[in-house]
Amino acid sequence: MHSFSSFHAKSFLLLLTFLCFINIAVTEEGFCSAPSISDDTNSNNQPLYAKVTNPTLSPSHLQDLPGFTRSVYKSDHALITPESHVFSPLPDWSNTLGAYLVSPAMGSHFVMYIAKMQESSKSGLPPKHVERFAFVLQGLVTFTNASGTGQTLTVDSFAYLPPNSEHLFESDESATLVIFERRYSYLEDHIPEPIVGSTDQQALLDTPGEVFQLRKLLPTSLSYDFNIHIMDFQPGEFLNVKEVHYNQHGLLLLEGQGIYRLGDSWYPVEAGDAIWMAPFVPQWYAALGKIPTRYLLYKDVNRNPL
Ligand SMILES: *[C@@H]1O[C@H](CO)[C@@H](O)[C@H](O)[C@H]1NC(C)=O
Image (tube, rainbow, N blue to C red; front, side, top):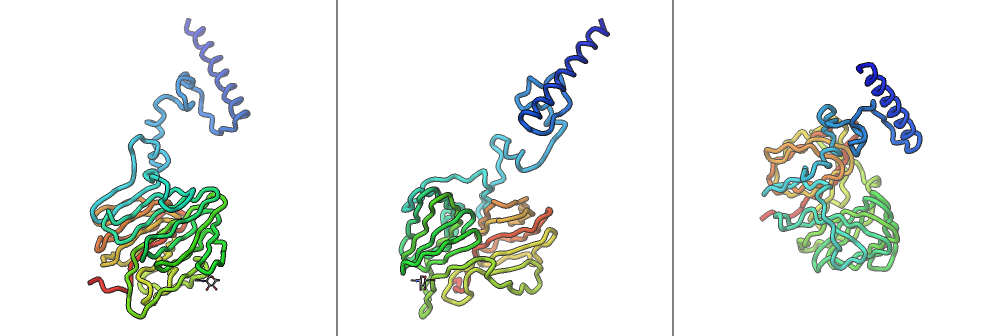
């Protein structure tokens, strides 16, 4: 009896192994684990209870967990991770979906949103007295300024529009922008100019006491009441200053991964994550992993906080 069933078990294993090879040959689905009797009872072709004996903490697996999110919303900071983005049609734009990641409802004086332009899409104008900064994350966007001059904006390029300036962003195919807007804080005798540029054209700036690389996308002159910083860290580099300051921030992690400290919380973060930092929230970053970190950061500047 024993040898009989063992013979059958062996042929069954051989059959499964054979089927497994066919599966690889046909679908190229890669890894074919040792066949087990439970193989065809599990829809993923994984052994029963495989997640217990082969645990993983990789973010892609955590995102599979129903109800799990790394997003956090607190009174002085928020981490908004991609699995939490909710898109809806942007008012005044055509064929464009937007996800607001930071808004005054959180306590900020600016909005930060992702705009996903689809085929034949067009931007709308911001409200009166509101300035706009748009940065291309994906695709090609045609930008037309108030004099009707058109320019193609590619990934890593940007446009700044002072308040009440006519302009249009258009896309024939899919394109993604991250946009910051705020009510302009007027200053006598200072008038901001429209600006179009790209990250690689901006000079590397000195960062005394720090190791990260810094570029500013807008001029530092008093006409501008905010700036957008591009900050690059090699893996293992971190902020020296454990910053606490009056300025507020909206941050989009463009590349890499690391740990962001916000107040007393320490968050693992990766490209695609967005962060809101209220004034005076203690903040600190360390880049980890194997590839450099790059993030884009809104910062209000040049105005008396009174
Ligand atoms: C529009 O862009 C052109 C080319 O860069 C520039 O010469 C012109 O001054 C711009 N007009 C406005 C209103 O910004």
